[in-house]
Structure formats: structure tokens, C-alpha cells
Length: 320
Ligand SMILES: O=C(O)C(=O)C[C@]1(C(=O)O)C=C[C@@H](O)C=C1
Image (cartoon, rainbow, N blue to C red; front, top):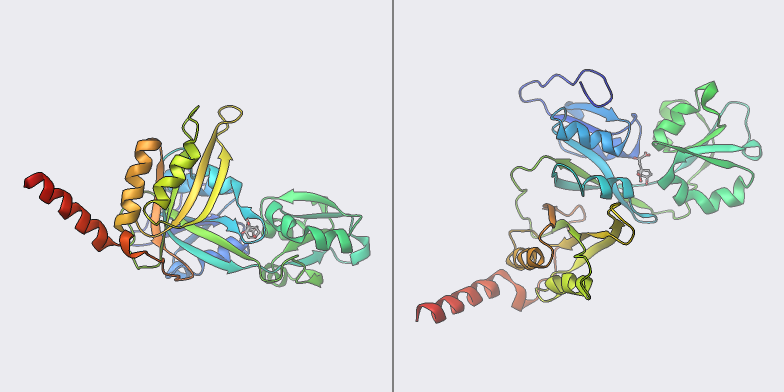
């Protein structure tokens, strides 16, 4: 049985089974549909990020697509936390989706009548200023996704009269849209990851990203500096760094970090070895191609040949 209590999907030989933060019509589904072959694969919506990852961990899905970062609101805590603990997982690729929101309402409701509006917390954070200006009397009700809020609008007992969702799901459900492009930042983008159980690493492309989770060593002055030093001395550029509480006790944090480069790049591998000495419990979450194809800027003294030359030099000293 799947975590939702429904029978697990049939594992047809050769058929990929994907799960994603559902229901149908979420931005996460749009991200999954960018994965080559996903349109012909089995696609199972999950009700939360945690249950999507559980489908993968329990073998009911080959891989999951979940949101990880938004250009306006930052990291998606539910995902950052869920991939940092429990059975290890590996990110296989990242997917970018431009985000635009609409306000859909129940039949007969006008913009001025809206008193209760529902959507995903990340979507609400991206439309908050618009909402304050245009529906100031509306109370916010959190939903598990933008599409779940849109579906709820068709249910008399859901208790809200408006939903913030994608234009696509509003038109699929035939909802009444009273305002378009309501995001506070018009060119917002959300980054999603395709994540699976550990296996073969994606090949390096020259434009790659590596994600790690590093627990901050306890009671060690300068521990964060030591961690950052491992990257800076090897010329490894950080593209995201976030601290999250471990939940164990107050003040106990881990860092979730993305860096430019692949574990097969000598400078990244060397930095990971250094990190392992500083924080042995670090978790490698994968090396995968960047969605924007932006190549890493590698300084000559941190290139693969420079590392190779240093190894050979040391060997020559040892061997005489
Ligand atoms: O609710 C959805 O449609 C989602 O796919 C989730 C999600 C998120 O978690 O950030 C994805 C993109 C938008 O930024 C808002 C919500």
C-alpha cells in the first residue's frame, strides 16, 4: 500500500513511475512534464512533499518532483527538511518553472466580496502585497497546493470563496477568474528537483550543481567559517546557502548548500573531503545539470589539471 492508503502503482517493467506534489494542475506537475518521457510515464499525485518522498523511499515510485526554491520567497522548508533526514535520496536534475497566479472565485462572487482566500503558503507569500491592496478584508486559509485550493473552490464545504492558483488549472476547471498576474514580482520562478534513491550519478556537463546538507558541529567556535573555507580555498562558488533548525534542540542547525560544479570536478571532490573532516555527518544530495546551463567560472589554480599536477608533485616528493 502507498502512504495514502491506496494500492501501490503497478510496477510495469520498463515503465517509469513518477510522483509529484498534486493534485493535477500544480506548478509541480508542470515541472514534471518538462522531464523527458514523463508525459508517457505513470504520474501519481501525492498530497504533500513528505508523502511524495515516501513513495520513492518505499519503492512505489521511481522518482519524485518537488519544489525546492522560489525566486521571491526563497527555500521551500518542507522539501529542505524532508530531504535532509531519513533514508538518503539523490537529486537527478532541476527544473525551472515561471510562476504566474490568478485569483479565481466562486460563481456570483466579485473581487470586493472576497472574505476567505486559500492557496499554498508559498503562493500566498508571493501575492501578499497584491492581496493587501485588492482584497484587504480577506482572511487567508492555507492549502496543500495551489491546485488543491482551486479544486476546493468547487466544494461547497471548503469554507473559502476565492483561490490563488495557476491560470492553467483555473481554465481546466472552468473557474471564474477575476484577476490575472497577481504575483508581487511579475517574473517569479520556482525551482523544482527530480529526486530518486541513490544510484548512478548524472554525467558532468560543465554546467552542474552539487547539493549538500552539513550539520553545524556543536560548540565549535568558527565552525561555519571552517565550512565556508572548504569551498573558498578550492574556488568553489556557492549558489545557495540556508540554515534550517534540526528540530533536536534550540540552536541546533544544519546548512543546506548548492555549489557550482560536479562531484567529478577535482575542486568539488576535494572540498567535500575537507567538509567530511569538519562535519563527518554531511549528506551528499547529488550532482546534476543546471537548468540554466550556466557554466562554472573555474580559476586556473582550481582546475582539474592544477589538482592533477599537485597530486603528481606530491607523489614525486614521496617516491624520490
Ligand atoms: O502549489 C503548487 O502548485 C506547487 O506546485 C507548490 C509551489 C511551492 O511550493 O512553491 C510551487 C510553485 C509556486 O511557487 C507556489 C507553490
